[in-house]
Image (tube, rainbow, N blue to C red; front, side, top):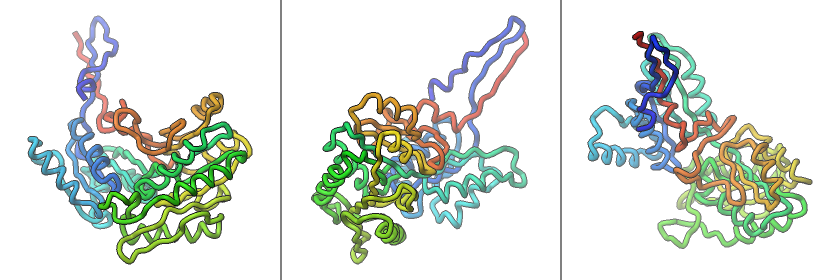
Length: 368
């Protein structure tokens, strides 16, 4: 922001001095998700703040307390009243009202595709008394693929799939929910991922001996179990498939094999601990399958073939592409985050252009 605050150099003439700079947009609405409930909420709230805007912060209805604690910290640090305003509540009760309000200048949203596209549509309508076009910054999830080449480190590939698919119970937009493996290594990879998954412990993670905890709530549990039922008709259940909501919303890590690339569990975001495998006859087909969804958030390629990696660099169409590692765990400052297509507006959170989402350019010309 210190750099953005400086005027940008543009041309001037002997008779004229020209300056170009940025000014804030105005009052914005930030709608944050329940997963990564502090990191995403904090980043999306303070980005428009440091660019000079005021913010209505509406955290997910399942996680309001963490946002309240952030407010306490900001006020203790000296943030003036009215800069970030804590507005908890149900999305259906207050979310649409805030999105559609004529004085709302921008909306920053992280969450599901259905809600995000609804916000985009509502924000596009000019309301009575509104004198601007609202800007929308949206990150709406993914259907993320790890491609495993015939020439690759299979142990690295298996560990990458397991951690990316089942870390955080698969409740992250970057989670690996699809594996496309070359037919020469498909069976060996599947068997090794199964072996690693068998060692995953599921339970109350306040006990650190457990790797996987519960999913967020009953609605998520029912949705994920519904996808598992669908998967049993679309592929071969290799591991898992069970759930228990008697003392929490626990779902065992689940692996399906031999799934058609067009199948439901290969196309729709599940947001739970479910991964589907399909095979490809060569690397070109693997990339075609990886690109065949509406999403484009993250992806990974496990390969020792430099030519294939360079092909993927150009032709694997995701916002965050990783080579020889998993497709999750973007680090602030290292991996600016955001996706293509139905994964959102490709505003790279943490990247060099992210703050410009909340500002507009202004030219001032003075005759000398």
